[in-house]
Image (spheres, rainbow, N blue to C red):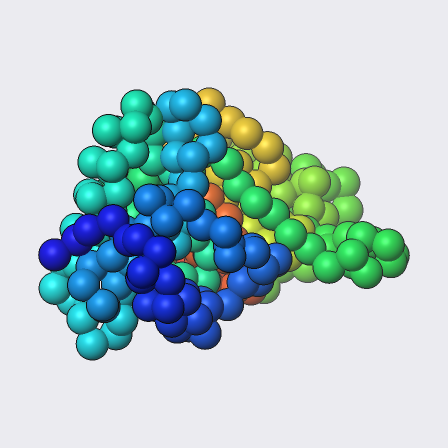
Length: 290
């Protein structure tokens, strides 16, 4: 049974709050909530609670949601959220917001399922990192050509780069051409005219992975692991930077299921494998040497 807490429940609420803080410690700051308005705390018997904070006439914050471990898996968290929604609606609110740690995967999964979406993002970094020297992580990568004639690939690449590049041919029929980061896309496009399917694969700023796939001079697919890492994009552009498993499979013989599983996109690098690891995984899916 879910009910509004009273001042007689102060000891229970403090006990539940202490358990919550022990399990989900504050990473940035410790809120001093000793003076809760007790009509804004909901209790689920003695096993869970939710606290609410009015932010405006139309919006409230679900400040804390906690269910003791022994009572989890029974839908009590959802019941508390719905009770909170009913309560704030009775107060004239139209929106219920909440904050969740990026590291709290289980809570984020629950909130996603209930329809909560990101409206604002709180970002943090150590002060020392901002005051010290800024080390720019360079982009690294190469162009991979679906052609095992290393001499031809080298000659064609030299015409584009106006120098003779290093070319390594693997056992799978692909040749890897070394080039500078700002040369990758154009080199891949030009080589696809003369030497077959090509892909520019890069690890950018040490944080995101990109590939650009060409066939006979036309770009047929582009992927960026975090589409908006370098700036906000229109929704259509964000969608377009996701991998197209069907096209990739047709041109590289990759397993489309593996392309779909590995070449995922996210709103931040922290939601994906470490960038260097993802770079190697995508190279493996494409069948090229990173």
